[in-house]
Amino acid sequence: MKKLSFVNVLNKKIKIVYEDMEDWGECLMDNKIIKLNKKCLKDPEQHWWTLVHEVTHMIFELSGIAFMAENDEEAYVRCVENLVIPWVLDHQHLKK
Ligand SMILES: [Zn+2]
Image 1 (cartoon, rainbow, N blue to C red):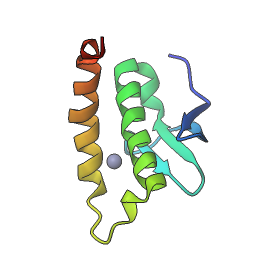
Image 2 (image 1 turned 60 degrees about the vertical axis):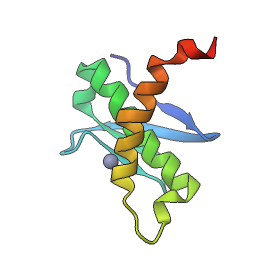
Image 3 (image 1 turned 60 degrees about the horizontal axis):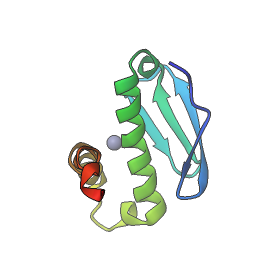
Image 4 (image 1 turned 90 degrees about the horizontal axis):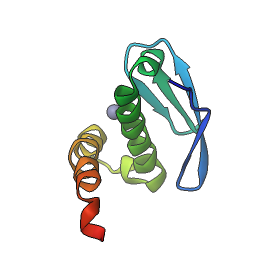
């Protein structure tokens, strides 16, 4: 699939880079970069959900939530990614 160069997150331009890496993705807030594993390019579904996961990290970090004294960010990100977003995508018909 086609590589992305940038995505917009909360009106900030976030650079997308593809690398060989251990994890599926990584979010570097200070540099406004999201790294995605090159392997994602072979699987649009994996690419999409990894992007969703890293964008959720970026939003939590930009919003300040990631800086709470007790930071269970990974748990919150997984909740949004696995439960909230799929629910929203499955229930868009309720908007009409
Ligand atoms: Zn994560």
